[in-house]
Length: 373
Image (cartoon, rainbow, N blue to C red):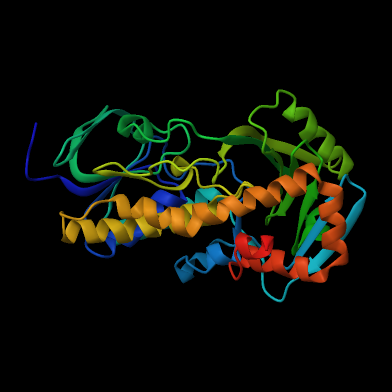
């Protein structure tokens, strides 16, 4: 099976933000890319769809056509009782729909020459010393490298014997559409809601979109059989049971980063985004880390393509240094927030410097390590 040639330089499995960004960065540098996606594109994806400032600043600028709401106000509460707001001079989160964002990045990559193969299920992946073989229902492919952007349960990690013990939280989210008219959404325009302790070890959120609200609850706990009950209770407490219709209600796992330091690459493979376990230990937010890990992977792959004597280990080193190390401090803060939430809330409400620091972390101007200190 050995061969010195390849159909593609890189095969990327998964067309989410991580895979799309990686494909875009690679293809615009004349590296041949095949994206394999099991669903038909574009496809609906369960996700709050919030782009933090540090996320939207690394996207191609024409993504702005996708934005459904700019939020400048963060409303935080604890146990539905104590609350305060923080207003920013910039959109702290831009709201998008994931199907549109993912497809935008994929089409960007295609514009620069990437090939897209959707509605395709992978049967097997074989890593050899000099190439990768990917077998699908339709055709077999060969490449120099493979990138796993296929999520927490993806086949790439299993095939490469990586990420054997992921740590997960869980979330459930639905899209709330007004039953009468869109004027019902005016009170949510320009603001987002984060409500802590509405679920054990977690929070609820309301993210405004053009014609609906994305609402959900997240817990850092690995299991919760009655999570739907917490979601229903959250809707009731926020006054969203009457006048709104819940659609696309879906539960899913979220890979919490920073718990374990595992290799994120093999000799010819790399994991990015959720496949690499890169979700914020406090909020479960993963879009920025998907985009950023896609960028890091593209840089390392570009160097490898130009000099095959280099190792892909540089990718794991860079992700550990830039992302995982900071997740460690986010984990400490997560314990403070969820185990001693009343104390942390009182600190935040009384010390404006903590509020400002939190905003700077979200914006990418400060790290969790700096906030912790």
